[in-house]
Image (cartoon, rainbow, N blue to C red; front, top):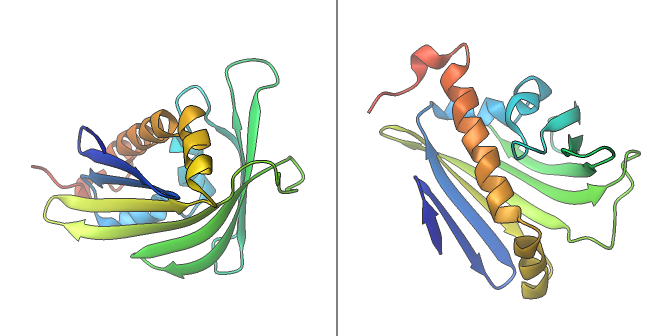
Length: 173
């Protein structure tokens, strides 16, 4: 288990589990995951931010997105298919690497992802559990830099929440 800031990362068997606390109300943190308006401002590592986002946030809906890298032609497309949404508590979806047209890349790991939003005295604890097919796929994702990229993504979320127009509701320690 890796612990940095107020974040933990655990890999076990076919899972990667990220947990982090944010000084913001649960409704706001949940909302940050539900609209392109929010996601465009924080999703992706600093050098791989979103440059395309199309979301239909409902069970059965999809989120098609692209992160653009620092070099000419660097792109990483993804497609999420929402299975369950319980506002403001949980989002469950299948997440895939894809291409610009939304065709799933079957050579890359696919994720069954559960995001849980739990109220705390000082804000919201978010737990993301990503299940892949095997321990080898977990190792492949770690080698690709997923933990560092996800940590940077959550750093950006923390910054976004602090500057959001509802920031007057952000909890102070």
